[in-house]
Length: 279
Image (tube, rainbow, N blue to C red):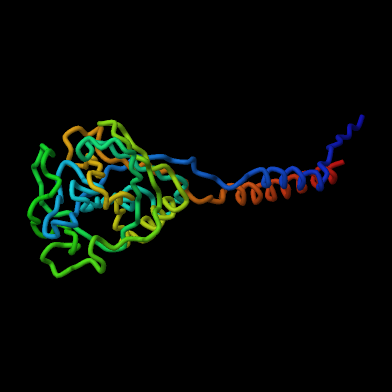
């Protein structure tokens, strides 16, 4: 008695359809959105009516007019490039500062603007070790290389192009700051703020931080006082929250899978041909 075996051939078209579907189903890998919080690298204050005074590393920064209506401006920056991957795409930015005080109990809400600084500066040791911020709204005699109203680095032959600091004319973000002491005030994400941080990441040498500017800075008793990175309570120090994602990366397994499938297909066809000869 003679037996014959029949082996079912897998249609070639079907195999390609299955392989194609598997490859197309593999989309590029996307990293999840990452959110991290950075502490300030440096925070300083410069004084219009005291052009040789500064607070370089003190516990607070002043932003706005004093009793005579003379502006104080705060400078702040964060080391973005040291904490975020170079290829990251910035998707959101928020700055949070905590209010330490107001000028003579000023209760009028003040618009505090963030302007990207275009001039490099150093915070210097002026005010280092000070813990009590009452009565220091005129600053201290500047110690090089602290910033002052006229100079990016005091007595280093590095003046600002414009006295009072070099910064973009347009505000990147604005927050209305009231009088609630120890409260957190946040500059919420804007396209301009996101663009600032992306530029700081892409070209770290241009990261000079922001100028904190009170829109009422020429009005008497309008300043706000914010805790800095030198403040004793770490929970009340400046915080920059940055959200980012990484660019899409194609999956190399897709090409591997398709190649492996073709090899497997050839083996199947060889097996089918061998089976046909045996019958």
